[in-house]
Every structure is written in C-alpha cells, then in structure tokens.
Image: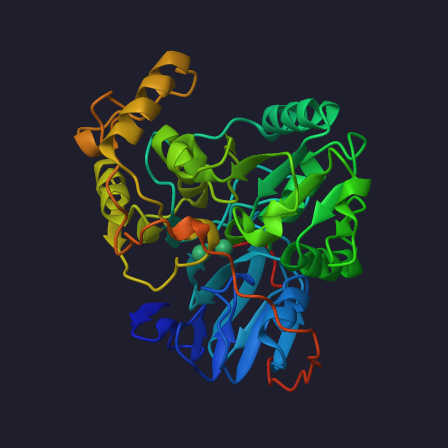
Length: 414
Ligand SMILES: [Zn+2]
Ligand SMILES: [Zn+2]
C-alpha cells in the first residue's frame, strides 16, 4: 500500500487523490494551508483552501482558479478524503487532514496552539501520521500569555505617547500586524499604518474580522497632527526614509525571535516584544501528543534537533526537507551561542515551564545550550525582509474544480 502522502521535489503529494499540499513548484491541483508566500505560491492550475484564506490569497496572487471550503467539511478527491481544520496561525489558516483507506495523515502547515482572539483557534486533529513545522522547536522558545505581552506593549506605547513620541512597531503585514491591532488599547492615541499593513487590514475587515480604526500613512497625511501615534509597519520599513518622518520615535519589533536577547540587540530597535504566530516548544509538544500520531515528520525549523527529541520520546520520526520558510517569521535570524545562553539563563531564573527530560544536550535548557541554525536556513537577518507588496485584488473565482463534496461521515476514526 502506498503511503497517504509522499515527499516529492514539487512538494507534499497525495497519490490517491493526485494533489499537492502547499507545493513550491506549479502543479495541477494545490491544497493550500494559508496565504503566506512560502505556502501559497503562484502558478498552480487549481487551488483549494478555506473560504477564510481565499481573499488574502487572491489579494496576493491575483487571478487564480480557486475553490473555498468550510472548516471541518469532508471532501472527496479521487480516493482520498480531505478536510481543513483551524491551525491558529492567522485568519483562514488550516491544517489539512487526508484520509485514504482508513489511514489518516495531517499536514500542520504553520500553527500556533494558543488562541489569539483574531484567528480561528487551533484544533488538534487525531491522526496516524503528523507532518509538523518546528520553527521554534527548542526549549528556550516559550511564549508568555498574550494578555501580559499586550500589557507590555500598551505600557511602552502609553509612555511614549505621554511625551509626544511616536511608537514605531515593526510587524509582518499579514497576520502579525492584525493580531497586534487586536492586542493593543486603541484609546491610547491614534493608530497609523504602512500601506502593506493597511492593504491586509482592508481585506480582513471586508471578511468580517474586527480590527480597530487605523489611518493609512499617505503622502498627504500630516503626521504632526497625530503626536504619540502607534505606527505599524513591516520590518523592512523600520529605519527607512518612510519611517524617518516620525520624530521623535521609539521603535520596537514583535517576533518570536525576540526571545533571544542577542537577536533583540542586533535588531536595532529600542524594544523587542516576544509575539509569535508559531507554536512555542511546549505548544509543539502538546500538539503532537494530542494528535495521537505514531509517526511524525518535521518540516521547517529546527528539524534535526526536533526529530531527535521525537525519537527520544518514542515516536517514529523523520526530517522532511521542504522549501517552507523564507517567509516572515519562519526565517531564522542570526543566532549566536551567547543568545541561547542568555535565554537559557533567563529561562532558568523564571523556570515556570519545565523543559522536557532529554539526553540530547542540544535540546536541553542548560546554560551552555547553543542555538544552532535550523535545517537549511542561515540567511543573515532574514526576518528583516518584508513580504512583497500584494497585488491589487482583481481576481474573480472561477470555481471550476471537479471537487466532490462528500457527506460528513461521522467522527474521526481516531
Ligand atoms: Zn505562515
Ligand atoms: Zn511557513
């Protein structure tokens, strides 16, 4: 019997249904987990994604032949049954469940286990085999709860606003920026946005995602009329001529990599807030456990180390090379051993989340732990790259796929 999913040079492939999931080369039929550029690529003949993910995909990719599905509804493609389940990564993001002859595999895409109040909350999907990202698959990566990070950001902004100083907050324009908008207190001062952020805001607002009022920074806007404003822009805009109109200003960067002090320092922002749209170390472990899977494949991130941890835990684990990453937060900044030492020391000091027992020194939270590069990623300063400016949304749905919508056949097999 063929495996439910195979790993090909074009991407993750299902022989029984003759489709790919988040392929990186053009294919006939692509099932897409979410709209980030490394997962939703141009050039496929037919796309299938959640209804909530499609508007942003069309906005980014232009005219595509695409069909949208509801979360949780089962569809038959060839001899495979597929369904999409919330991944908690950004609005519309999904894990994709594929069942063939009673054998169930799940592709996680990018995911975050903690609810963020904006996107559909992560849902564990029971399966035999789980293909998981592990962007932050090291014990030093633990996230504080969202409310306490929101408090930090609001305190920083309010203190700046009280002095008439602008607060420049760098965040990726799809997902992170909107999540931050939901975290901050819009009563503090006006909120200004870079065009890349505002364009995504408009798409999500049209879908019904509630966001506070924002003002797009256009050439004609007199920024002097909004002292103390919070300015949300993609990381690439920080330090640019665009940003220099805001004076005086305090700058901050919101990313999971801000967990590492050395990265914070080299980021050349005044503040770093630890906010990630990926699962932290405990989140990855919990997610994997909850699937009940015996087989686990690690894709982008600290794959080798993560796979060793999985082995030690008794999983049948393997590393799968993919071309995910290169997108937003998936990318690895420069991480030096000292960064990890610092993070480990901080972690030991606060030690409320215990690191798992493991015989592998690389995955321990000991003060001498080092944070190596995740597989295949060592691009310098890669988190500073902003996603390409989205195309205007001039797409229309053709909906001409031959997808059969099968009946929802009761509870998951396992
Ligand atoms: Zn993503
Ligand atoms: Zn990704």
